[in-house]
Image 1 (cartoon, rainbow, N blue to C red):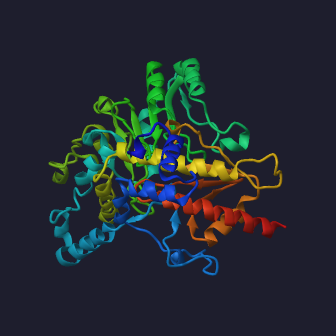
Image 2 (cartoon, rainbow, N blue to C red; image 1 turned 90 degrees about the vertical axis):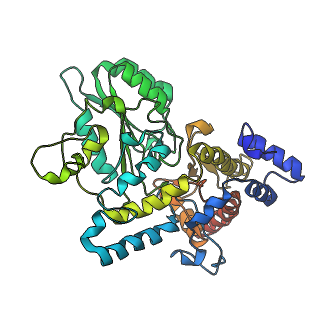
Image 3 (cartoon, rainbow, N blue to C red; image 1 turned 180 degrees about the vertical axis):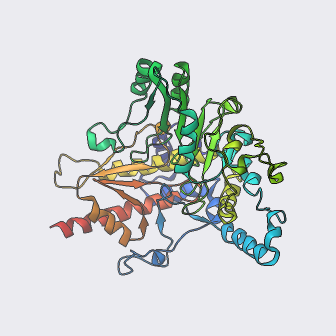
Length: 441
């Protein structure tokens, strides 16, 4: 039996617990799922901090020799083991070759990022020539909008998410039908539709294919900020006909803080949309160094490059993308649906609101329950003050993320997290809730 092929996570847990003759909440279920996880070897490609290495850990409460529960890949991914080796290689090359490093070695500095763009394209569902690795996310977003947003008297609006913190305003997620209805009603006046692929606060995965189709039907350009979607959701930017997209790489793509960002322009726009700001790195490599002041602009996203990329940022990104190349986004999403679904089931079992126990702390999951409407992240809203719960989790070796007013973002990442991590987290959460309750009394 392949438990990963079941229709829903709940069906998996029912099947496995029946097979093992135990409760669905038993640690035996987590162990069984880990043993049958075809991607479990990928965890070995990353450096996972020990509990004692995390600054907030209280070693009177937890065993410092254990690996921490790292559920914060939505903020910063783990370090790939090969990252240091690759960086050291380039530092050594610089020391021994000096300027010749631009053209020599396994990753010549003059075009090192070009050598890994196909790997990046595979992660986002694009052609290699539609992807560029450059700059940071905000810079890329600005230079793309400068070219795609061309307002006219009739068509001058930008449609984007109205509320950065939806849960502060009542309704927690945006309904796809409401988005599509707005595009249909307002589309003739919209120049650009710009959405995130995954909403960072709620964890909602938007229907990018439907939004792209609806926007383009009304004559709008459609772009996506994929910061929380890349390496998390199975993207098909080319097939969906997305006009442009950009993303950072330090979250689910594990390139390190401030890592090299990515950008995408669909091939259909390669010869019609030009950069508003040009730099010499957008010039054809074959003639780039002639310095004749004649711009030989590369087509598509390649022409949007401004300058050469920092080789020390290329190295960790290469290390991570090589791990992605050991599997596929389809396989990662298959595991992710079950891993996050397992977390959801355990939270609902232990921490749902109980009318019979009105004083018992409870957790409300604001992330959509349908697996196709979310990535790996669950956003948990607590009935008790969140700061104390967060502090107690950190003391016990959990790395997660707190967002005001009352949400924890928990992201079990299929590349390196296990089902046992999820089970441990649920146990630790119970201790953290009990300890925080005592602090507040």
